[in-house]
Image (cartoon, rainbow, N blue to C red):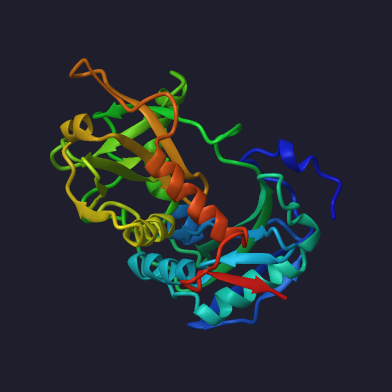
Length: 340
């Protein structure tokens, strides 16, 4: 195991020993191979550079309480990357190639899997780029698939704690029928102007829908969760939108919520409904669940508060998912694959 201060890692890139690559020509993907070459050799007119023809993913491997390494739902990432590829007119990476590349990247970087109990994990960034040189506007026909592993710490350092958000109405991260449902770099670049302004104020950014600017869309780069309580009835509420990336973490949490007897609802959520919620959070692969303590709407001069500490519903779901990922609880859904 590498001599790394595992407990001090943040969500930052740490150079691994190997990455894994595979190229596609004439619709045929080559066998993935490991290499220590971390640099791209691209033509300056490659479609990924000229026209943004690229997609990526994010998934993790966990060293469990029993010392075994578990990959979490990588097949769902393979399926989502295939949808992103089809959305950008790219040749999808077959699930078999995707899986072989992930397993090879893990095998060649086992010393970078953090020890159990450090809060750190091995993160994988699968990347798909168009490499065809092209001047005229149009899709390429050649592609490269790369899996980049890196040990990471928590997305938000410190204990499981709350984050503040500010409502954004002046930047649209994705159009209703554009690329919001795909995991492509352009969506994130489009959000930088708003997210960096929020970060400079010590907060994160809550995006509204691009058409009406009245429905909750996404929490920066993560899905939104709201908890409604009426007596002993609990509702797990998350937005339905064609501009939102389908989150594998959110899907997992919805399943766990149903198991606990919570009502799970996906629909348009008006911003003003925050006032009726007892808890709120962002969720995604990187942060898992990031509870929200308050949402500030400067244009309306309104603040929605949820408490300075994470609520019991979200805390329970967070722990339930982490217990499965770290092998502390039975994986009844077949979400984890033990690496051997």
